[in-house]
Length: 173
Image (cartoon, rainbow, N blue to C red; front, top):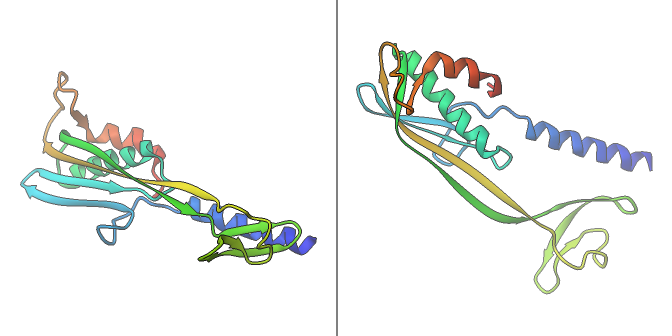
């Protein structure tokens, strides 16, 4: 019994570590999590941020704004104007592969062509596979960087320093 509790505790701590891993970083490729930018012309960039399946939409949008502000300040500008902005979502159903049973201990599920998903140690107890919906968000924006004070009447204009200060509290570098 103690062994089963210890194994379950280790499994939960591994899952918690994965869920809290920093995601604000450059993307390694077009399919990985993180930010990407493409220079369009002087002072104009296309910026995107792709989150993991555990990143809420609000965080993905905040990371995008933070990256736009960071990019603006790195290039010597003071504010940026969002020309276009959008969020794409991709959802899919994934079967749960990992199961923890108090009676049988720690085990993995397997797929049998005739019977579907079954537990390795208790194939007769799981009649139906367990699925969960996984959604990944990607936010994109085209920004134009400007010097000086942001226009007060333009709702698409953002002061880069204010964005870094206010949104930066949510960022996990």
